[in-house]
Length: 100
Figure (tube, helix red, strand yellow):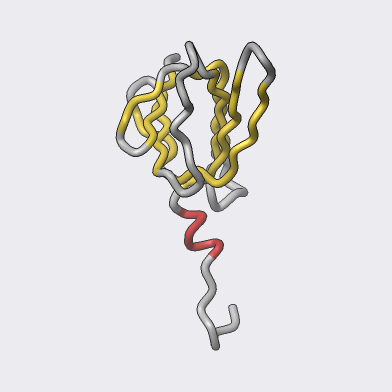
């Protein structure tokens, strides 16, 4: 099984772990991955960035980055990126004047 990650349409390969959660009892799928900066390279992730997770070449999550957690010291810099699929927009939106 191979996992690929694309952020803003660009493939990203320097991740150390990745997970995807898709369940029938959950309306929105979620993902997270941890990336490590190499040779002083900045990690180009921001909240709201488009993110697609592919497993064996098939898109299983197509969504957005929602949370960034940083860990760093004098020798290394890593970031854990979390988000949900596009269905999350429906869940998070509200229509004024309509009660569901």
